[in-house]
Length: 550
Image (cartoon, rainbow, N blue to C red; front, side, top):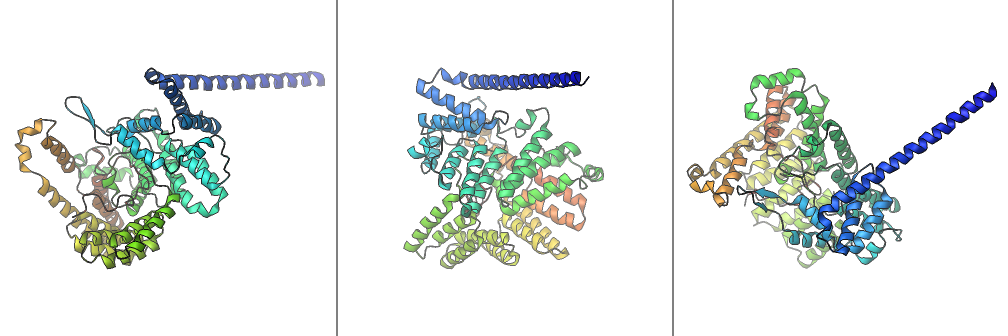
């Protein structure tokens, strides 16, 4: 009997091993077929127009790109090997640049079905992006790409940057983490680079930028995709807690879930008071996702008050500044100041670099000198006060922050954004009824100014101008622009911040009305559908955009 039992166990074990082998063979076969299929499909439309060397470099690039993006097939060794061979064949990244340009070009379809691009043309883009890479790609880096012989944090940082530019974000994260392990002195700087890679890893890219939900609609279960993307945002914030874009992406994904659960995806002007009350009764404010969404979007504004204007579409940033470059940029700015010690703009310029590297105390010191030397330049003074507000605000020096933004308002009393920024500062500083009233007053003023400015730029001739029918005319373009402005809610940030104050007062109906007005769920609002850029922050494009008063 014992012998029978042993034989039975041996037979089971043998069968399990056979089954396991069959399963592994099957999975390997599926992976191989998937790679062959993807490999052939991706390059089938390109191969016929390429020379042999170009064809080979395209092969290596597409293979590495496919391997680096699909979690099922991701294999770091194979990705590194493919990208290394690609870089040797195409050191100027012409293929990668072309692939990236095709994704980020901003197509405008005219009535005659012709498409023109607002962005740089392909060659300009290549020159621009290639200039960004010149400091990190050299023969030594290319030759050591497959097996990194330079056992230093610098080598891994260089390779991590290249992998980031080639959209191998997982590989970039691995290299940046290896660099961090080799040199802990760079931890703060590298964390920003890791956060950026995590964000791009979870930042959906659309084939058609005018359909913001295109990616969500391509799969059977959008909520699972939102969960995946949200995780990448959380990882990004873990490494950079001031990352405005990551807060916004996380909040936006929460908003999509709220829209689905509470049927809020209709034009704000079509939502009646009783419908707002119905949403409240259904428990929209009892839902944790709602509170998380509001918190995330508030933090996005806290870290970049201008983001709602600056990021109308989501795309890949072609030339990010990595944190390890800040010391060099500061050194260059410092040398310029030595040569021109009384130039207020140079202090302002260095302050921006300090701001990006999260050295807020240095920001405040440099802007104090900038303001000291810019007594006759109101424009520079206004922006300097704004940037110093941002530094003080991040340091939670709210009283000084209010003084700074109030100084900017004195210079430009008709600039709506400044009132909204001061309102947010009051909201975080004064946690009482007086503070809430100040928030509401400043937001009311911002909305009033914005509405008045819209009336001023609306030409009456638009109604009568027959040339608007001509899609190639300047008048037609202006009409589209003004239509976009007039059909969106006035000043999204002001409505959203006022909603915070109303909710704190217990006025849920008015708070929800303001939130919906800010988010304007039907048209995507003045807030972007998703964001782009390196830090999310007003940092890289300060002075503020052209909307800032002259």
